[in-house]
Length: 163
Image (cartoon, rainbow, N blue to C red; front, top):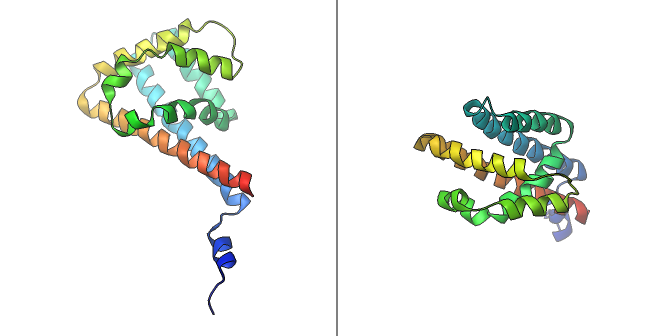
């Protein structure tokens, strides 16, 4: 007995529970990878208060609401997906991200000075340049993993809306 087109479609379509699990899984993986990268940064900059604060804030936010982390950070990875996919390191090292910081701040209603975020970006770039080629490859691969987590997250969110 063959299945009808609608029966096939229903078998292929994920349930609401499966989609919610996909959202959760990808947001947690995104956060875990981000925490790994921030820990790498912190290990090289333990005396920097901004990096320590970033590490602590990320730890709290990731444990209490990982979805907020992927929803705020994910669009930045998606925005630069081609450069990430092509591993264009110079693009990221040369880019001035101050406009991105301001736009994210406005979009999410974050108040306050952005100079700390800009300083952290500078520290990230400087620290990245201090890594050997193997470490740089790991970092780029981890950033690409985060992009893939975000795309899977978006796909599940879109499918969930369609239900």
